[in-house]
Image 1 (cartoon, rainbow, N blue to C red):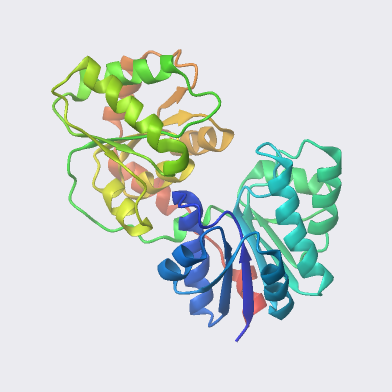
Image 2 (cartoon, helix red, strand yellow):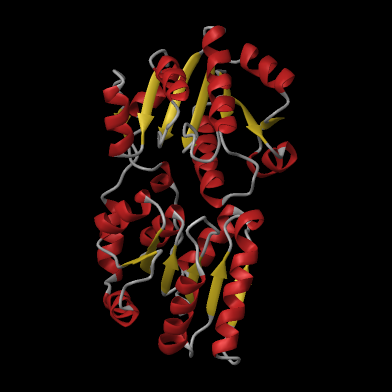
Length: 337
């Protein structure tokens, strides 16, 4: 069996990253690999994925795991960026460096690279990725950046397109998925709540937190704004749940207004009429590709018109768009033959 170490933002109960890990683990199990995941919560990871797991910052056991492995997979997600902090990018680079030092195969898996603002961080990432066995990226900005550094990655779609979405009967509910972010503001929350009360007071409003440590308080705050506008409106704040449960709940919605990229992606795969809240370029890109309405963080749009666009969307067209995306495992699989 090929021994594989997997490094990423795992164990934080973040929907998108856990969904990516699920895809990686399922593929590696199909390829009969022996899997160890670096996780902030090894007990959670072991239980949910049926793999071995080592605590992310238990550097001694990280060292031993890489030493005993044949392959390191770094990703997916946006690991190699220093906008969040330099600590995270240096950690993920350190893990890659250890694997290269011990002459292990290194796979950079479907990552969004950058922004990498500090020159020293740019040099480190460039040095390491030039020596990786295989590099794949999930967007054209990452592709252009790495090509400018003399690296030739493969451009792939997001691996979540590999997830199977169940066919379920619509609940008729309206979903709102929010994340706390530096550009989040009261004006956006208020205008969004006001339009929801105008358009959907007769429906249940389900407010999704995808990472409780970051999003849950904001979701409760938004519920409070809705209730202040209409005390009779039916609302439910839904804390982060296991991957399967979240996907099933999203799939039952009739409408979704969402910030997080993977919430939008799953909704499109289920044919849910979706409006994106554009806090990040990756959200703007998928909204443009799928031709769905977009709300900016400045909330300068005419919300009545945006909601009319949302209601006029065709579910079959959204499904057709999602079906045009297919994750290509060909080059990945070569390392496990």
